[in-house]
Image (cartoon, rainbow, N blue to C red):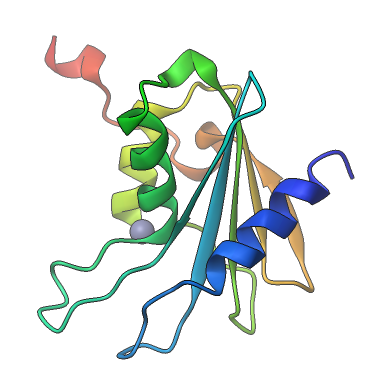
Length: 132
Ligand SMILES: [Zn+2]
């Protein structure tokens, strides 16, 4: 599989998750078109509302370094859950604005694997075109 290395990087990032409340660990890795990788992990907080998901951590890191929508080739999002999980609703909304429609979104829990686009994960989404 072409993006196995990206999934492997996401699993390494998952080791850095701070999840003392849920014990549900998430790792993510963004791959830019120039080959740069940005990792993220879920970082929980006792207030719960201040928790940041792994995929948002990774995509925010890429954007913080100046990369934008057209620069991103793929993102791998992995968990240690028993079933294959997709991003939460907040992350789907964030990814829908910060990724292109063609960006590959690779999901894995180590046993199952899925290769999606944002249109698969969030059809008929609310976009900046709706508010501009
Ligand atoms: Zn999320």
